[in-house]
Amino acid sequence: MPAAITEEQQALDRRTLLDVAEDLFYRKGIQAVGMDELRDAAGLPLKRVYRLFPTKEALIVAVLDRRDRRWRGALAAHLDTVPDPRERVLALFDWLGAWFAEPGFRGCAWVNAHGELGPSAPAIAEAARAHKRAFHDQVAELVSAVAPAAAEAVYLLAEGAIVVAGVHGDPAAAARARAGARALLDAASGGAGAAAGG
Image (cartoon, rainbow, N blue to C red; front, side, top):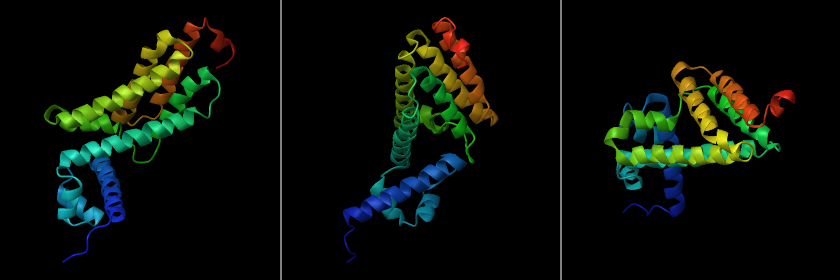
């Protein structure tokens, strides 16, 4: 009789599978990656894979949820290093630009997942919507400290930059969106930021 799997081993196997799945889904696309490929890449028996995640959809949702926490956490940590509220808004676009320039950038994982499977997989569609709501709220809170009326427009600039960078492979989309955000903040403050060189 095989030895029971410890909680520590279970957690390690889960983390390994999530790491492998996130990498393969993002690089290749979700539908292009089968459970056998995930099993082989993770070095786990297929039975163990299905014990950890009973369906591929459950695995995808777990990947998206974990990525959401890490992605928004990294953004928040970056913004926390910028003391000035106005500059913090612009730093959002600097962070996006650095992300867009990373090797292997393939756009927004949540938009990609929604585009591939959203209409036929409600749990995946909801994971994508939950990420977008949380990012919206993060941006709205950031901008509201400076120019509440500009919050929605700045959010749309950020989302637009993400899509343009993903579809066109153009990291400079972040700099162009940053210029648009700066113009919105300048207009909201009567041009004070432009005079200060922000």
